[in-house]
Length: 421
Ligand code: MEV
Image (cartoon, rainbow, N blue to C red; front, side, top):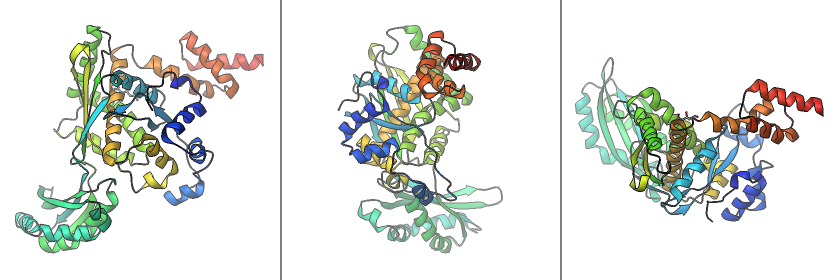
C-alpha cells in the first residue's frame, strides 16, 4: 500500500488505524491493543521494571509518505512533542517522487570493553592478548551458541593502551556481530565471561566489562533527494544551506540541530521498544568523533533545484530481545513497518532523522517553527485552559483564525464559552 495518503492527517484515529490494519493485516485484537484498550497491563509493566505503580501512556502516531529502499513504510512514532510526526511526514513527501530514501549499513558489529588496570607491561599485555585472540573469541562464542548459529558472535578484538590519569590501562574491545538483536546482553555476558582469562593473560585486574554505546561499527547511512523544496526560490535555498552550515561549525547550534534529528529517531526507537538512551548516547558521541561536535547530516545542492540530504550515525537497534518482543505495542509497531531485519529498521529510523532535520531547517530558515508548532500545540493549551472535550475543536478553530496562541487569550475564549453554556 502506498504511504502517500492525502488527508491522512484529517482522519480520526480509528480511521487511520483502519488503513494500517488493512496494510499490515492487523487482527481485531491487535488493533484493540494499539488503541490501548487491552494488551498492556500493570502486571506487564511490573515484569519490565521495578517498583511499578502504573504506566505512562505516550501518543503513538504514524508518519506517512515514507519510501525507504523502494518500499513504502508507515512509520510508528512515540513522542510527546507536537509537530514531530507532521514534520517528518511533510518532509518525506518531497522525496517520494525522487525514489524515497536509500540506505546502506556497515553491519551489526558492536563493541564490548574490558578495562584492565595494574598492568606492569601494558604493551607486552597488548601483544599477549592478540596472541591469544582465537582462544578469547572461542570462549566468548561459547556464551551464545544461538547467536553464533545465526551467523553472529564474537568476530574479532582490538586492544588499546590508554593513558589514564594515574597509570597506563589496557582496554580490550570485543567486536561482536549481534545480528538482529541490539546486542547489549550478549556482549555484556561475553565480556564478563572472558574477563578472568584476559586478566591472567595481561597479568592485570579487570574492572569494567560492558558494551560501548559508541557503536561506530554499526553505522547506517541514509540519503534522500528533496525535490525542488523551495520552488526555485534561490534565497530560500541559500538560507537553508546557511542554517545547515552553522551546525557544522558551531556546537551550540549543532546540539539543537541534532536534537531535532533525534526528535524523529528517538520516537521510532521508542515505538519499536528499543533503547532510546543507547541510540542517543551513540549519536552524540559519533557527532564528536572528529573532536568537534557537529551535524549528523549533510545538505548539498542537487539537480533541478533539489536538495540532497545525507545522514550518518550509529544505530544499535534490534528486532529481537528486550522490549521489542516483550512489549505488545512495540511488536505491533514493527509489524506495521514490515521490517524484517535490524538493518531495515535502522534504515527507516535514519531516514526519519534526515526528514526531521529537513523539516526543521526549512521551517527555521523560512517562517520559523513557532507558527506551525503553536497551531498543533493549541489543543494542549486549550486543555490546560480548562476546555472540555466537546469544546476543543471550536477553541482550536477560534485560536487558529486569530493566529495568536497566547495562553491568557485562549483562557479567555474558554471562559467565555463556559459562561455561555
Ligand atoms: C525542536 O524540538 C527541534 C528544533 O529546535 C530542531 C532545530 O532547531 O533544528 C526545531
